[in-house]
Image 1 (cartoon, rainbow, N blue to C red):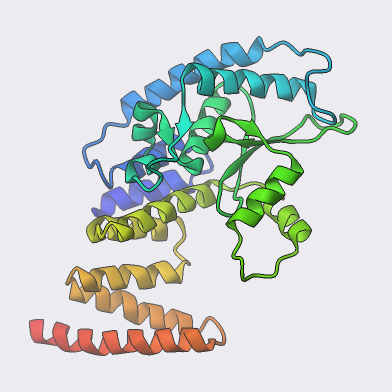
Image 2: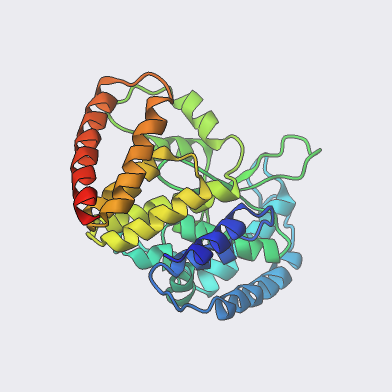
Length: 306
């Protein structure tokens, strides 16, 4: 992956500009190196203009909003949902969830299907262009959205939206059930505390892009598409340079791809940084021992190349 491209992606990903689409389309260039983002940005702008008409004209019908929900925000979200999911037929790809195309915004726009985080990103980008503020929620196992209620209203609750399931509005009980579905059955969890912490706040731009990249990396590794997995790991480190586990993974991927100098550089740096990050548990010590064996092998191989 070219250094200039990584620098451009880093700038787009870490920019304070709320636009997510540019960085998302750059991620797609892992699979489509010659992708022209222009037509897809134009398509998003067109969707946003039409959505603005629908959202602005959305009638507030007395008694239609659920109890404690801001009726204005409810009407606007329902108008956007009608446009995206009923008219344009965007839908979650349940049958081919592991298809890497679900992680690329250009493919989501063309095929009108994706996974929770890419459909949520599409939703946020169209909503932003339509003048409706929607946040991402880094919910465990299933990315969600929030449309905050107008402040100052009595008893108004935020709307929790599931873009993967046609913009479904989730109650607290539905969120709790979703949390249980994605929790490790061996973990003893306090449902209430975990639910509150999962729904609190909103996902930052960097967190959203990192989650997209982690999903894509897992898909590529399962497919044994190691060059692409290595490129995605490069972008993950661009989003979060402190993610030392990604440094380790980039080194291991380079090792499997027989790029021994790069593997040695990354794995040595990983051992150095992780050793100073605190006390290691038994599993971490065992992993370090395995990586140290890789490093010794790599040193011999790199020396033989010189």
